[in-house]
Image (cartoon, rainbow, N blue to C red; front, side, top):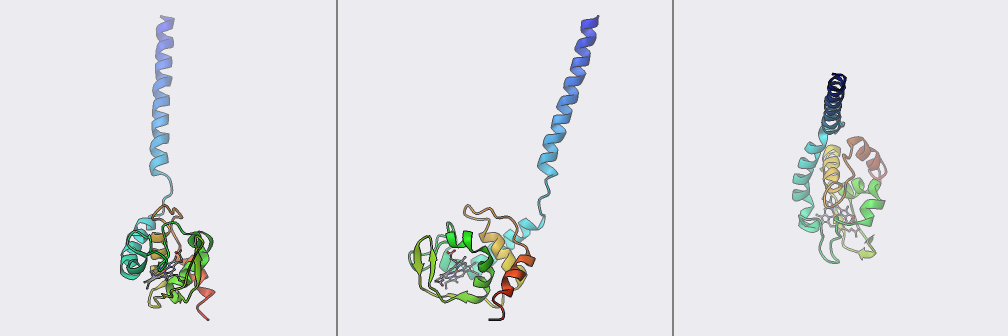
Amino acid sequence: MSSDLEYRVQFSIFIFQVLFLSIMVLCSISCTPKDPRFQQYFVEGEQLYLKNCSNCHQRDGTGLGRVYPPLTKSDFMDNHFDKVACLIKKGSSGPLTVNGVVYVQAMPGVLSLTELEIAEISTYIYNSWGHEKGLVEVKLVNQSLQSCMND
Ligand code: HEC
């Protein structure tokens, strides 16, 4: 009899542990705070990228030889995150070095883009092709732009 009781107690503990673990697993999947704006920024950013950037940098971000630099693997993007908002808005007259290659063509800026649109494009390029920077906030774009908008 006592071993039967022991068995039942152990079985109840086992069931309790399984339930507890299931709850933990479910929670780690759905309770992680994932910013609901991420998906929206990424999707909008992709459309804006296709419209304003992919002519030169290509759909897949690989650029074009020594004429247009790549966005796929770019030490410039890694090291100058704070400059990219200005680059998108105001362009660059070169030269600019990416992964050791000097690019001399000018990149035209798109002055009509809003801060939200620049945040969306940045979210797209910084979370595609191996980049995983997460959501780029409008606030951050606003801060970055302060360094160049009065030039
Ligand atoms: C007319 C072609 C053209 C278009 C359109 C264009 N770029 Fe560029 N981009 C360039 C060139 C050329 C450079 C190098 C600029 C230089 O040498 O000063 C560059 C540089 C860059 C860089 C930094 C270098 C690197 O490879 O990391 C980023 C980031 C970038 N562009 C993103 C964009 C984004 C985002 C858009 C769209 C909003 C865009 N570009 C539109 C031609 C273009």
